[in-house]
Length: 126
Image (cartoon, rainbow, N blue to C red):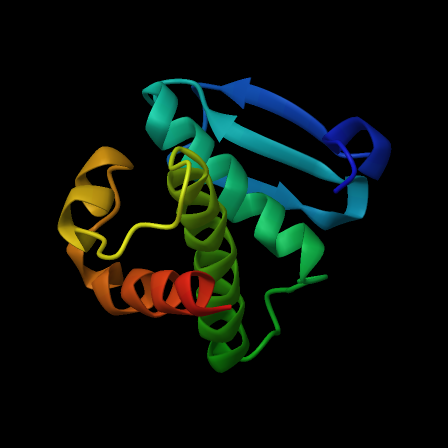
């Protein structure tokens, strides 16, 4: 995968945003809340990168359903990145994964358990 620089994405850290992160497509800019701890900041960055890679562009006139769909796609992207990272620490594919441990290590909310489990199943069987 190309680096953020190669993709033309600029990243700014700011304490002036309320969200964890924001992607501004018109200028290829990702703003990350500078008050976040490292794990949370990387999660936010991966989520916003998911918006970029999925070519998400919303306006105030966009349907709420589009926002929900876009957020789900961006969530799936960052959790998939974290699953790949987690598995990269193993020399051989593990027989079992403790999904709750994974969620704790990467500070991922329990509501993403099913998505993480599905992604682990996919990567451990392909």
